[in-house]
Length: 174
Image 1 (tube, helix red, strand yellow):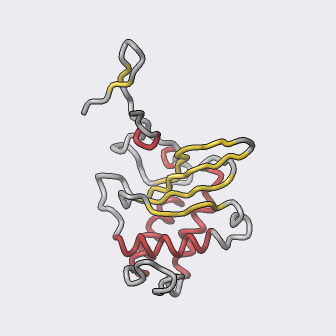
Image 2: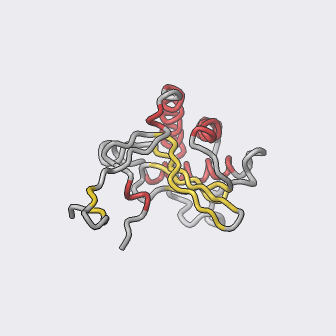
Image 3: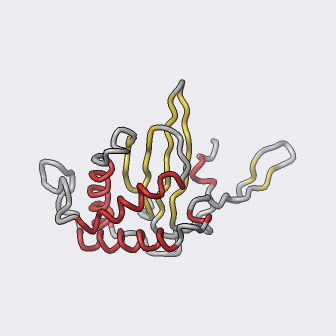
């Protein structure tokens, strides 16, 4: 079975940032998936589940209401490893081109007085939210993005080096 593209990223070297995970082209349409990584995998604690859930609600609401971007947003949701989020947008833009959008989205969390959609009728686990921690994580990431604006490492995935056998197949050690 072929290894999926996101597993070819070297998770031992990735830093928090905004990365293009993949581009899918169907006919005349392009859809781009971005990896919005808040934590270093396997080196920093994962994001608190309730805070992650709150960030999902707040930032999804921000993105789907942004006048410039709302028609481009397909999906905003958490990674299973709880180190970041996936953003799927219509079109093809570099990670740098969405930097201001992501920075604005995370800064907007500070203005949230409540978590949108955190009611039993709107949410499958409405009691699992933590606005205070969501604000802390969002602020931490926004400060980091601003401090590293010129750092190319926050925009370029570190790729895992794989040995290639003589017959052209990739070698994976366990």
